[in-house]
Length: 241
Ligand code: MN
Image 1 (tube, rainbow, N blue to C red):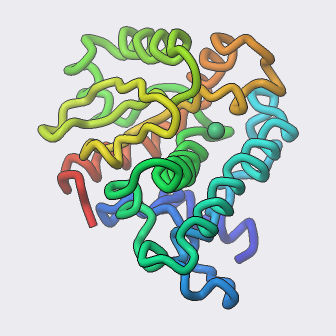
Image 2 (image 1 turned 90 degrees about the vertical axis):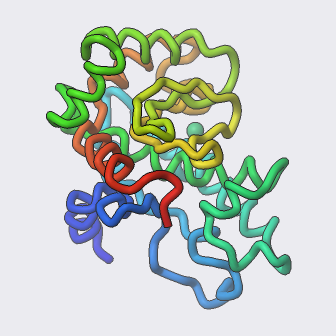
């Protein structure tokens, strides 16, 4: 698929198949050599924009290291871990829900990053779509208060991890700060938005200044994607197939 066609596809589907009620993060292209391994475990989804599209928020160099070294590395590790085992035929989401240790870490990191790329957009920022905005206001009092809470959670989180906006089993929104490869996928919660607070996510551009990175992230949030994720959770309860 050419990049232009891919961009059109991801613009329609939000990069992940949320519209159909699932959040499935893999491409359909399947290299023949690894045919015994499920595509979701070995096919890193393409970035939904070019490497320099988010600059100056994130430089091309920062994005290339993050996507081509870190994210690609998790897929490589994952394929290696499942090769020749009964896990190889499972979908990524199933492995995340049923594994622990190194297998969970690599599977969750593979999924989390695929989701994270879609949470940002060159045209990001502004406010969420109406339905999500209403839910945010109901849960946090106001959009401004929510932004403050999310920023604070991401800036203050100690060590590596992910800060999420997610729905609980009743559909209510909450902010979750999770360590390491932590993900709502294994917690029976519905992911709506995430910010990667691992140092590798920002260190090339921001060095030690995570707060600057987090504040700049707020102006690049892809609210359209978050809105689609929220709608999917609202109509189809997590976990969805
Ligand atoms: Mn990362």
